[in-house]
Image (spheres, helix red, strand yellow):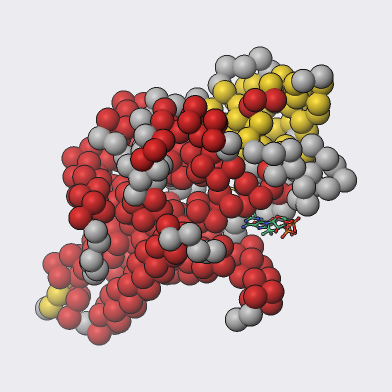
Length: 383
Ligand code: COS
């Protein structure tokens, strides 16, 4: 199913694939049982240069853009979804917030260390009563002389406890909210008043940490503001346009893994005297999954190319996320069905892939939000 990648993209894909085969996939059962990704695994990813794949070369990255990021996401997810989302919290929505919204000085200060993995980052937008509707957030940043004082709580923050620096979005003008009343800040770990709260127990992606972050009158200098006062909502949304695409590449990797295992199983498992892959009932399932994977792959890389070539791609990113996550649900469901009892047993990886996949229809904007984004754009700019 490969189309032609550039030489550089092929090299980074092979690098990520080897790393997945040698490190990520063997570590996956341990990560699943302990609910922990060792820091050394993330450091190894940094050592081979994956952390800065999408960061431009002038800021110390590989300069391979969203294409590069999607390629790496796809490969790493094949080995373990939790490792991929932890990587994504940093390399996608974490670092991309700085790229999308930072001043030149902030980019020069933070991105080279982020590219090398010396600083890991995370992205904190959601709150208990502001998930689909982040404009309703309660976290406040109030001016105090030259500084800001940040108070509130963010929930469902991927790798919020692993990160050295977190992009936090806070209300600075309650009257305006999404329309210019939200501002972004770069918050380093360890500052007074900033603590990590409860960790979620989840159905899937159990190795990735998902935590509450608490801000109890955290004092921030104005230099820690990311972008202009009131620009935070646009930075958050512009970053999510990219994040939704990288997440679709996760779906591609997870779907390919489930499908690949299903094809092997269908050739080897016999019923009624022949391999189950010779039964039309199984063939149709394999055909549908192969077709949907081809569609996801086409959408992911076409949209990544749009992003890298400077085109407006928010609608396409939402369409890709909507399709990829819903198709992935069908693909992993078929994989369970093809594997029968083996697909339901936690002794085999299919059960994990099924659980890992489910949240993709919820996080970084639910399917319902993607439809809203697409429909608004269709009505505004035409179908
Ligand atoms: N890029 C840049 N700017 C954007 C944007 C984008 N993708 N989407 C919206 N904006 C801008 C708008 O242009 C508008 O700017 P103006 O004030 O200059 O007109 C501003 O942001 C407010 O936009 P809008 O009125 O559309 O805001 P809404 O409150 O209606 O929210 C949706 C829009 C629903 C799209 C947004 O709330 C959303 O994406 N929700 C889901 C959030 C999510 O994914 N959460 C998951 C957790 S994050 S891991």
